[in-house]
Image (cartoon, rainbow over all chains, first blue to last red; front, side, top):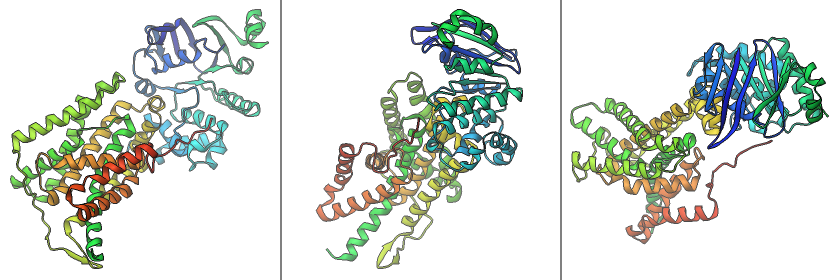
Length: 238
Length: 292
């Protein structure tokens, strides 16, 4: 479904990524783990078009998307829930969700009716968001904002979701809740690339995982294999 | 000075203030999406007024002139966006400041060459007899200004709140990068904001012209005050500009009456300096709500 082939990318003249390749098969959850500054978020940004890879290919559903602008890539079926959640603070929770479905809703009128099934789905998954539908997203707690960010990505009915650090800055009990949600989504057959610092939780939910170090993929394998890998064990699962 | 004259000056000033508010609102629209404003906005007001006047002279009926003027203003806004703003924003440079001033100067000389340097009266379909309300005279033109200003601002606010495109507009102002990830094209949203801002300038031109007459320099004083209003109220203050605009209109009307017409420009500048010194985000400026 999503394949990254040897991409280089970075900011200005400094290259952060050198030759990153990974594959996310349809209906699987793939984890991308590694230390701070290893290039996980940069990889995500290079895939979704927030950043232009200087080399290599990104293939979404058989189509090369590297070099396209982010809004175009979103229309092709990729939903990127960015690091730090980035919900639209001055807009209501429901407006945030509606904008998640921007790619397939009418621009002027009747969008609410058309989005209703997707809204209901997200509200079933996160009843909390329904309670707070009219509240401004900026006033939600961190955990609620994370649910909103995930819900917003789901609204797009994407082929692939990129989920960047959903546990960032959240209390442990909320982190558990987030991972619970990810497991539910996995059961529904969603295709997900997950970036996480909590390597242990990420490996529990993932079908396959990549470990990044200094801008490259250092190790890859199934979670079972990685859990037996001494290097990974020492560095990330200690 | 007697109270009725005082009230009369205040009321006339307040109506003029609504025009400042409307132009300031045009600044807000583009600032929201792109953090840039068109320093040639005054010239947009002026050329739109001239264009509308030309249409009227060609025999176009009044009711048909207004939408044509609006479309013309929107088109000019798009031209400014394309020629002066987009390249600068893509380079993350502040070049739009100089480029939009140059755009304005270009429009100014073009207007002088086409329509001459003289001021022209702008016809109005309404009777010029004032209406007496509570001892104060109000002209129909002034009422038209109030109705027009609130109508266009209301329509644009409705658009922003009730349509998905409008919500996308708000999303781009809140977080441009995140909006792009939703499939919202920031470039097109910025174009939209410049188009709307141009249309707003055209409305301001059509509304103010019957009161001030049309000439190449008609907007230079207007724009200075509109800018003061935008900064004093805050560039993200929404309807805050209406309050500040009317306040400034009243202040300058009273000060020119009391102290002499030479003092007319003073309150705007004093307010601007005070605002920058005391509250740079504006009286109604928002401080971002954010929780991590």
